[in-house]
Image 1 (cartoon, one colour):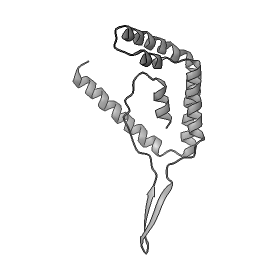
Image 2 (cartoon, helix red, strand yellow):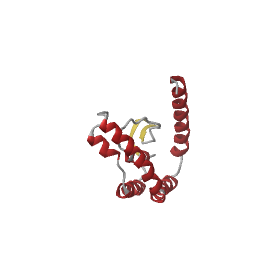
Image 3 (cartoon, helix red, strand yellow):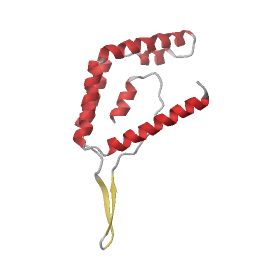
Image 4 (cartoon, helix red, strand yellow):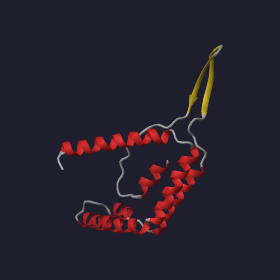
Length: 144
């Protein structure tokens, strides 16, 4: 894949992420929680497929370890198992149980008669997270 193709693919993903953010940012708390519960359910229902894909990742990580391109600890972090998948699902459910921080008044200041200034919490938008060798991180970050 050429650099221009990679750049184009990245721009497409960023645009899709931004569009998804705009939808998610305007969801009611109940709907956001439903998404998290559905994600937890999908993790559980698709654990066999997830583990099969992870086995492929582990084989590649093992090759990198043998070539000195990956440390043993990084290689170990790639590994998923049923317990980790269940923990990922439970983490999604734990986030769903938290109060929704969006739309909360953090601070209010009266500047003048009839002129009030409010600091209100809101979704921050799209963020880029770079991580290596921990497939469970994608679920943790997505849930938050």
